[in-house]
Image 1: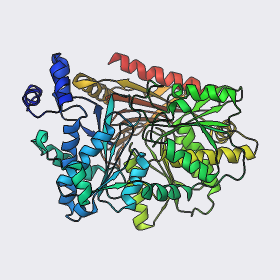
Image 2: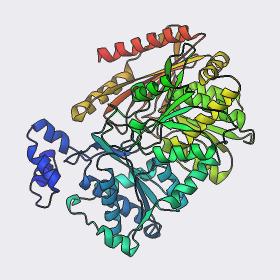
Image 3: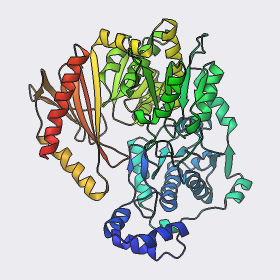
Image 4: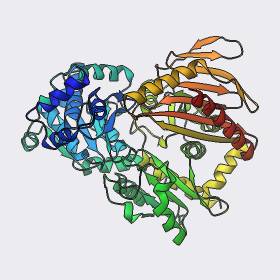
Length: 567
């Protein structure tokens, strides 16, 4: 069925949701119609994500119903017992999130499948925990993470509490694609389903053990007068983060303007803790009071950002790579009970600083593809075999995890660990800035960067494909004093030694990523986002000093952008 046929199907569907019907009647631009109907929302590294609205390429009740029907059929097909084990559903504060969560619950209930539905919004890591805690067959998290307010999304979790890995996700995608009559998928009556026990409402009975699981990993405040400002950026973190910090003895002041959940994110243009602008209100508060640190979590509370004061008293944000390296160093040094077979897992687009620090602290390092599900996959393996002990996992996009209670990154835990770490250094008369400088002085100055190019719609996808294909055949072999030593094409799982020309297999699942590795731990990588219409270019360089590293970074970016301009 082409996009025009899909459009006509929706136009002629008499029972179409009235709000979507109104949007459809206002849609007159042919390009807009094509973009809304030319495909179904695609599953990427973390499920599906898109603009809220009418059409097969949008987030709406029908696409949620189709995905949920496919998930139910897939889980029951794996094992009939999964019908009784059920699915846990949670959601963030975004527009339509509560409605989408309820639609999903009603679809599963109509299939006779058990549903555990959170009474209100909860963070993504608690959903991951709940799937494991309740021994459910799977989980659904309605969220678009840090995307703008126009977006929403749908993450799928397996019985291990992790986002479905490729082998399972491929089967799920096929099951979803097999559903043709997605406009007429049955939905059970909500109240009847609750009365019959098909839908069980959950809350504090999961909140409490989740809180305890986090507290088992973080050390209580040793008596340090730590001053913390916290912003949940209108998201799910407000209650769980503050609860954990309070019970551990870490007092924090919340940013009142950003405390309440709000899917319109009225105080920020983009609810992303990677962006310094989301901390503007918090930084004004910090100017008026003596503050050690500012922390902020994204809407579904799986990622956390940090603001600190440098030696000149200016506010600076730590990058995800810097936070990760600091946490790896601190955690490995202070958790002496960890065995010798401990492992730190990071992604292929994460800085090598964390890996260097981990090895210096006696840990093995494993690199995985982008997506926390790959970290969770290794965690499962170690839990089953006992051959290694998972110590810490993280990715450059501000996601961190320690312990085995969940299989996704957790900003509730990370917020508490960051407070513990800051208190530790304050006792020694040091700030996080001082601790970071110590890492650089010991291991070299690592500087990272990222460029993100938004290319929406079908034309944007074609542009991204053209850029990726061009970089596969045309690239530079040196910059500054660095020489290209390895070229990795993860799509064909092939690594090329640039000196000998020898090729070897990359033992990771296929993924459309290119990585160009130079000597001295410098590299850049290209990766189309799996959940957003973006092409991302990651950079990492090292130097003998901060100035030298910065010069190398500017040179590297200039060379890469020269190739981009030529394309």
